[in-house]
Length: 190
Image 1 (tube, rainbow, N blue to C red):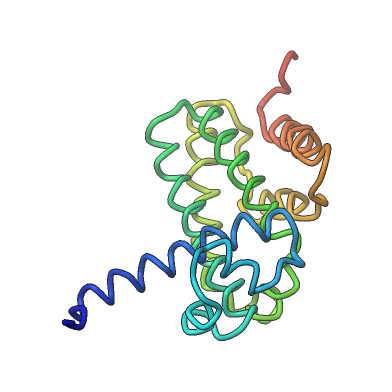
Image 2 (tube, rainbow, N blue to C red):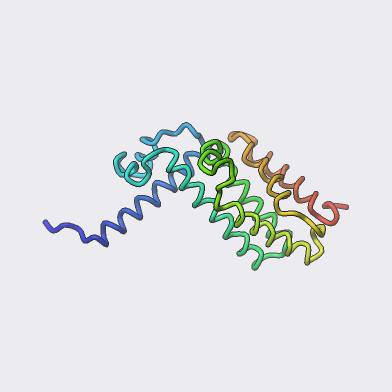
């Protein structure tokens, strides 16, 4: 029997890694107590394969965090280019809320891995993503002038404090409405 080529192994390894991250993201958003064994099983890989990619639970969480936050950062630019400013802001905030479900249960690990956020390579890009949306909203007259991206990030941080479960999505929507109303030049319905 012929051994698979190194390229085939590499493609398989990348596929396994992507599947593990996808399963872990869903699992951790539902329950932070999901075991590594359960993640491996749901991903259709052996436990050894999972640990080859992610030697610790923390390594898996940190990689998942970097992957997910980069998606959120990238989305800001796409939405700003494609949608009216308020629609782009709302859609992006909704994505931040989705991300918040993941971060809820693993925030302590992320906080420790990034030295309380001081060494978080995603912090500045995340602020720039917020600024892109705020600048577009200010230019259109929909948002108040002089809004600060860090202030908005502090407001958004409430989203990863919402416990998962029944009512979490409704609560997140109410909080997002409050945040957006506070950013607008005039509240909705005024």
